[in-house]
Length: 243
Image 1 (tube, rainbow, N blue to C red):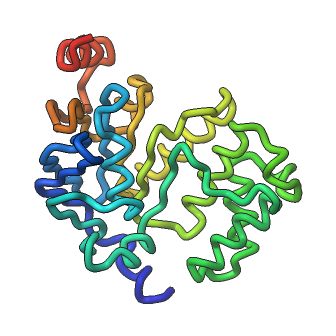
Image 2: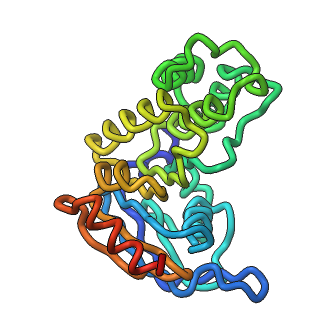
């Protein structure tokens, strides 16, 4: 294990006063949140609320306009390489190479992260996502759902201590969604730190330790989810976002 991977199980996420502006559009307006090490936070919010922007900032894919954040004990601004080494990201973009096979893709990412025995690990995570029979096929021949499942394999190949999931169920068929839920249940039992955005209230409440609602670039609601009923939460959500 290289030094940048050594802190993968240490630390959660701390966000303080983060804003993000795209020209005159304020995507985030002073977001503060804390995700304790080993806990699972689900973020709900309408389209355009700032969920994806926040995930992209935590993943070092874009920089905040102001404010600060730490991920896994590392400062986003000063230690982005360390942050990337301890996080796995699943988003709308699968970040895969269409001209390579599934195995070549995941083996490449495993090698990037200095994973020991990269081919063995790549085969392991591909099998975990139910794609073993297609591992030698080029990715451009995969359906959207299969590409999303492979992107999950990409995100976990280096065994990250922190996962950032932006609408991970998007494009998944029923089988793929079931595999993802099973994987996330296992990750929760392993006490990894997870931040997930989703519109799936049932899955979000079941998997998470805490839920938050982000609306208009601000956190407008936060509560432990252990005893929360999906129907009651849906009612609160509709009132908060004005649906």
